[in-house]
Image (cartoon, rainbow over all chains, first blue to last red; front, top):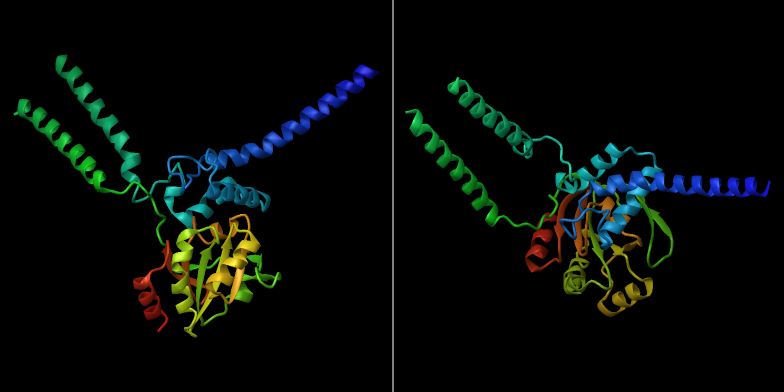
Length: 120
Length: 172
């Protein structure tokens, strides 16, 4: 019986711990994709600057208000522009960033294909 | 013809790469957020510094009046430099100056105002810095000009005499 009691206590403690981890993981995932504007080159998650700490509090607040991950990104994008996101969407400023690798891939592929066809 | 095409295209690729790098060499690598103008002001409620009451955005910002929101802190050195500018702007009765005290100690904030004068009609407290993020700010000092609940101008960094003249022109 005693063993069973201990087992239940340990099990409860473990689940509580797991719940906390889940709550934080959503916040961590979001803050990892937000750039800290004070110590540029670090994400909000990595940074411990005043600005990053306030951002973390605000992300928690927005999650409590029921905003989804995407809505939180849109919210920050409206305030600070695309730069705040580590994963910017496709728009007129970033199309080169997104399309260049594909173009290079196609160009390289064409050269390889051509050289093979020529060899034959 | 085919033999010439390859070296030409290689030279072209290198020229493009050179142009991109050369252009980036002159770009600053410190990013400041684009100043988005004509954005609506955020809706918030916050404690006031001197009266200890709570107030909200609709109570503070009325329509058809020019407001200047200044984010400041007693520990911020550039805020001390721009304070005389705010004092001279506060004499203009067309402009209402609202302060936002950023991550500060109440006692220090009050002694800062006692020492340098109080240009603010109301001072909003921003204890954890979230309020200034709602405004799209990321440091101190920052200044916003508001008209009809819209941000019409934003200044990052301390105000100076040139900006003083610019602000006076805007509110004319």
